[in-house]
Length: 93
Image 1 (cartoon, rainbow, N blue to C red):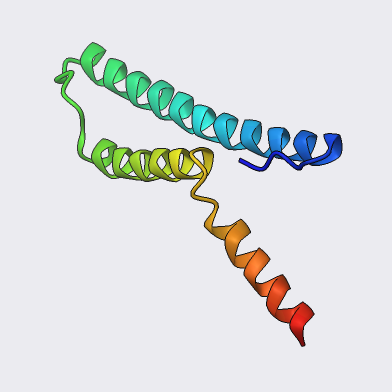
Image 2 (cartoon, rainbow, N blue to C red):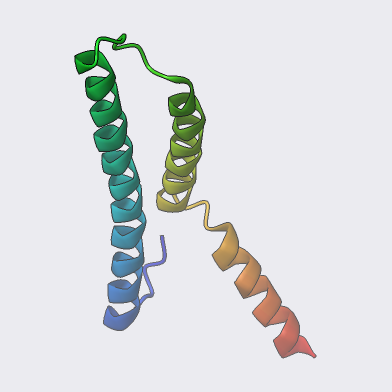
């Protein structure tokens, strides 16, 4: 983590990290609400309470979103490193 960030940079970084976290939490909440609602409706209609096929596809997407969120929050910052490298390259020209 950079310790030479000024207050404005820290605010922007904090905002970005909060946006990343909230994006995943919203995705998770919608996933749970929709799939629990559908499962409950199926159960009340006399069907099984077992997960249905589309849940698995969405679950894979949710896991991928979770991995991306974790990577962004743990400092893998690939985008920032690439931008820094590109800026350095452009400045040398």
